Amino acid sequence: MIIFEHVHFSYGLEPVINDVSCQINSGDFVAVIGENGAGKSTLSKLCNGLLKPSQGRVTVDGQDTRTTRTSRLARSIGFLFQNPDRQLCQTTIRGEIMFGLECVLDDAGLRKKRCADTLEQFGFNGDADPFTLSRGDRQRVALASLLACRPEVLILDEPTTGLDYRECTQIMELIRDLNEHGTTIIMVSHDMEVVQDYAKRILVISNGALIGDGDTAEIMRKPDLLTAASVAPAQITALALRLGKGFEKVFTVEQMTLEIEGRCQK
Image 1 (cartoon, rainbow, N blue to C red):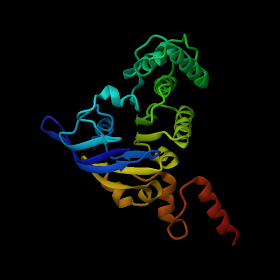
Image 2: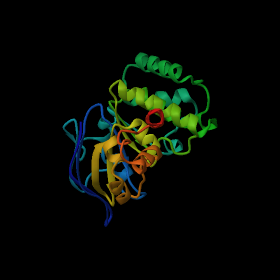
Image 3: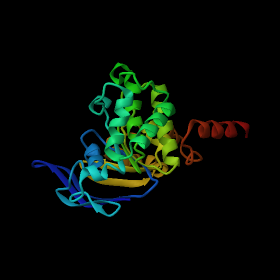
Image 4: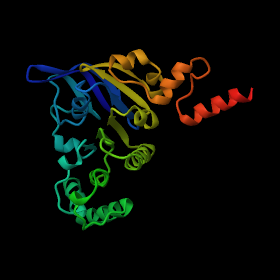
């Protein structure tokens, strides 16, 4: 459980996060949305102690991030950066996975087994150089190195940026499976289609303030709130809102198709 209590954060004299209070529960799949520069990435880095509040408090399972070593928090919280090239640091995929495992596991035999299992799960050649791979596969390597450590919480900063549709789907289906098996997901994203398809809850950030918090379906049907954060609802929801009465529960293409077919048959 991650709790924000009246949290403020500034870079120098510039305030970035303003009096944010919220709670992220175990097993949540939370999307953080808002305009560029709203404070989304800063909020995500406050979750695991990479940044410390200038005022207020952030606790992770009761541990205050201001006084708990970031390395200790990293044992239970994984962070996937937007650009995998800022995360990868080894010349082989095996080395990349082992690098993280060496930080959290003392048992050499268990590290070796966990690495082998992860390579098999993702279908990687352990001797391959990750920097020769496509952007999507480099992102998968970075994700694999985190998942090998089996974090309880996974923070994703724009995980689908630069990916094609196939790569995006591969990454997000894997993340959904992790959440269904108990991993808490916190995802910063500008892609409302991805947010609607995968997140269960949305935090809306604007100018560093939390202006919305609710179920994905609830938030997506509040165009005034989204407009205030300079984002638009997913396309299918936007269409349902325009169509009005009878389309209140339409959030997917399949639901839209069924609703229209039902009307045509009447």
